[in-house]
Image (cartoon, rainbow, N blue to C red; front, side):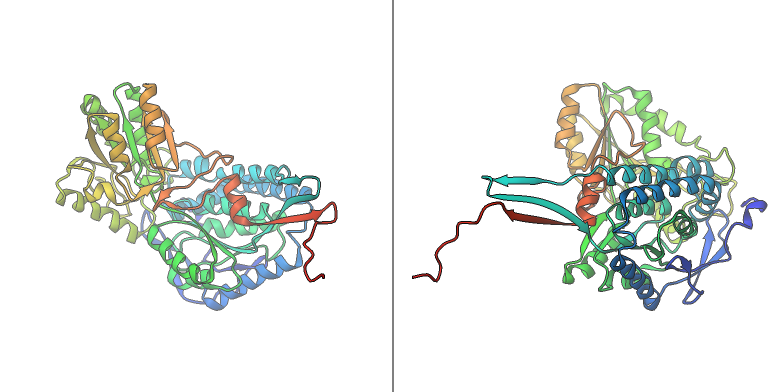
Length: 500
């Protein structure tokens, strides 16, 4: 249950945030649900096309005025530092709101998710004062150099599994490069991000530079992507929505950046530290209830260690504490919203129909009669072609696949429409090198789960796992327009055109 003393901090309603303040409530009313009890805790006023236009116009005015993009770097860095300071002061409030919306365990929200805000604003504050461009001479006759300019007004869309942390990554990157933006997250999880908008304003981000619209994809999302003054769309979420965004952006050549799903293979070979690999595999699939794009949902085991690994994994999966997200002892709370919960549960029946053997979990935990709870679940799959191995579930469901060599494991890893992350557990140098070079994924983790992202390095996927890369260079490529200036240092030699 939500602690009584915290209920007063939940706003009665959430509307869009434009020009540094919340607009008057209007539009369709959507319930904001606490997934541990499925009770309504707030009301979201959905942004229609008119409200989206208001937000985009505000962003465009701020961009044209230069109030942010022309601000001295030192002043922007000071504002970024203030964002971090205020976020720390209000971390407990933000953690409450995020947990109420997402169902994440409060310790996970407080200690793992929201601290990503500090890292994002720290990195991009430093980056904006250190980035340099290129210059070149051509036989002393010509000097060429490059400059970068803000892309313009950018739409920043985050998903329900980490709405505020993911949005903060995009906001910090967009502001680092002088853009103005309109932010949107899932209509199911708007509370903490709405509060974060006020923190940005209080920190000194000028009105209109960061705006927020809330609502469903087919209403608010479409209006935002379609708006002619939006120059680019950065989206983190599911592939179906990404396809919709790409199709709408393509006719007008609008720039897009898509960080999408995964079906990550977690390969474990006989030379690996088995105890460490088991712990890491549990972390990789069951953290945040498997609601993460880089979840290690396909556990690919060499036959020599498969039985021992599965025995240890299943025993520990069955001991994961699922329950009240505000209980400090809880490790996994409920899933984020009902539609997603029903979809995740449907894969248990799908897996059984395909011939998979249920080894752990399989439904609602005992003793929890309400709420969107799912037990950590694991199947022994009949083969990699099973739907449970090919489709992203985005929930706490793992599948085991057994192989006889590293080459077979690599083939299984690559037999997927996705290619975001892969994990390799081996102390054999040949196996590690073979796998890390041959696996078709944007990130290969060797003898470690993915505990954090290094913003200096690119993050993104092969195949259907996305377009573009997050990180320093990827952000600079997406959020800026690059210009080359050429200056003649000597009179150019020109052909005698039009002369006798």
